[in-house]
Picture 1 (tube, rainbow, N blue to C red):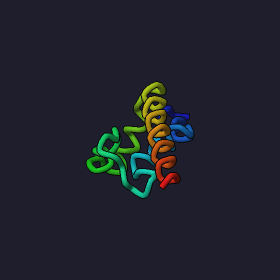
Picture 2 (picture 1 turned 135 degrees about the vertical axis):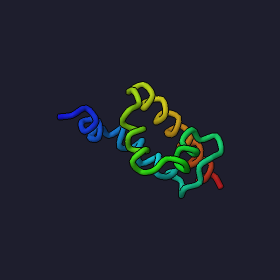
Picture 3 (picture 1 turned 90 degrees about the vertical axis):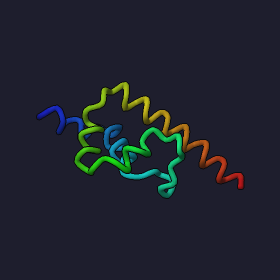
Picture 4 (picture 1 turned 180 degrees about the vertical axis):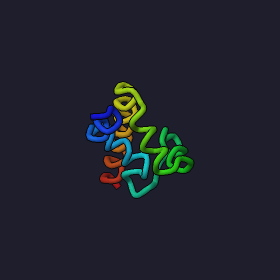
Length: 80
């Protein structure tokens, strides 16, 4: 199986690709979001290749940031 195709089936990369499409919180990404500009400028194909070409460490770092952001924002929403 080709490397890019194998990476497609990696759940972390699939999640990253989804995050490149939109923010999990109704598309309301914060200005500090590392993916916000990429969402606006990359085509669907470019987003796919971006997600597939990153190292495992880079994917993990991005997902870790988004998990923390999501947790903070959900917690703040539930307190309101």
